[in-house]
Image 1 (spheres, rainbow, N blue to C red):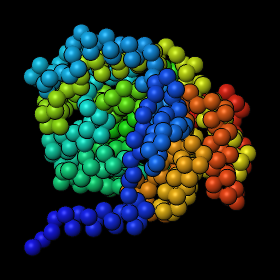
Image 2 (image 1 turned 135 degrees about the horizontal axis):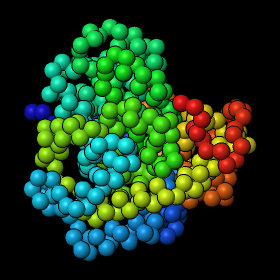
Image 3 (image 1 turned 45 degrees about the vertical axis):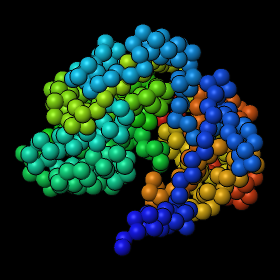
Image 4 (image 1 turned 180 degrees about the horizontal axis):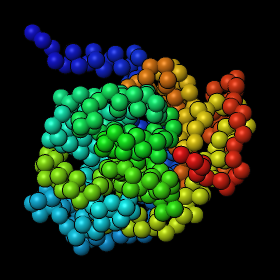
Length: 419
């Protein structure tokens, strides 16, 4: 007889042996004390640590006005929407947020999902299953949600080398001019921190009559005059057809969305099963996200402070001889290149230094590219940054050769140069 539990337990043990098993730390998050949080150690003693893993870049999840807006709307409208969008799940708060998102990205319309993952999967599958013969042309470093969206349909997929527009052009040239095609890529790649050559990709798409789809989840809130992302920074918002974004990172709330032409949005709204059959976001979540976006749009200084912190972090790492992967975005990764070692370093950082950094292992990154990804926020202070750099130096033994590249002057936002 086949033993289901034994089989599954064996698969889990394989992850543990490879160092890729994911351990979840139960975090008692504090809005008042962020980035500090509390947890119980193995002896069930309460300890405090500094969070270096949170994607709450601008700390909007702890902003009093955002919290107040959520509480006020929940008091008026309840805790949930109680239905799908076509069955009582469309409230005034959903429509207000979609209007804000569309205007922010300079698009005709927007559509909310319960996460950016769901938005990617649903949109890509809906387009592929309904546009005859649509070919995906995808950057090789695209996020798992993009890969899953393309994998879920039988359409042909072509992969171009990461950020390689010459290779992309070769692929486009190999496809008949009248054949439907969709170029799928990200603005900021969450593991490497590289920024895509959006302008060049958009030009190629126009030349070869291809649709374009960009994932802006790590750009939204952090780049551009009003924080709309990499496209706004490069004045390219009208050059890309479909934008995917998240409400769960820099905006600090929950959910995902796409923004595009009214025809594309209505099409996904009408044909996308991942949208049609899912209970909508709670009204209070929509209201809080809308408030958060308004505040982000009005406070460019928050983005400047955030990018200033990125520079302070990288300077501190250099001064402490800690190697990191250099890039033009805010993502800072310290390579470890061994899954078990990565887990060991993370454990020591937490237990001995009060520093919380989660190891990034396979399948998030390829085997041999394991790293500690540092996510800084606007509320990390110089004392936190210096302690982190010193702790990494101490635990990694300080024998790594640090990058000695010249950093911009303090106060210059990372990645605010040319595309």
